[in-house]
Length: 273
Image (cartoon, rainbow, N blue to C red):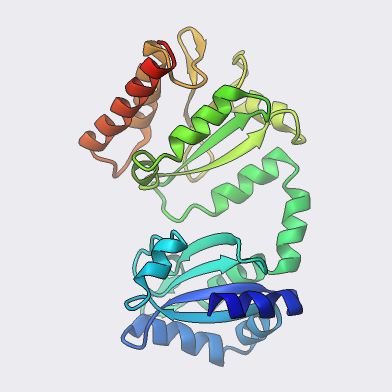
């Protein structure tokens, strides 16, 4: 089904909207009615997307293969014409009372058309724009945003990315945090943004990162007593990093923090600290 959608999307220059759910799901019927009966939404869908409804109960292997972590259904996955994932999206933020808010659904669909994403790619060269877009995509009031500054030539940056994306750490951090990565020497305004997030304090090299709340307020950053901790490999860096999480988490449990700290310490030994 996905392969057929990719073939059609390439021919028609459209993105693919995978709709996880099923006939057994009441909210799925409500969303489908909105898709079909709201003229503006229906027009945007038909002109810009190939729709692929998939029963989530009988296609669990596909869900695993596509690395979709549904938070209930209906749940949406956006793919480009090559089948590359653009975004996973819970429909809970669209809910108002017993229905989905047409304005929120329409805004989401318009934002992720082929044309809009191409425009965003160009505008995203500005660091402040990247930050604003990432904050707007946070789905909970208590969700945090990790803003990482990196460089393509930075080995420790790659190690940090690998650690944050590891199978033991990522599922825990995903409970409370989203993240963006800004390339220090490639993105307009990156130096100015980093200076703002560090509150003007000299912050050394990369990686450097800050944690922000949904309103963009700076909660903490990697400036420790001895300067930027970078990748938290040294003991004082690990302590500072764990304090950053402790100060900003909302649903992550203490034992899960222990898992993260254990992983960091194991890697620290591997790297010779």
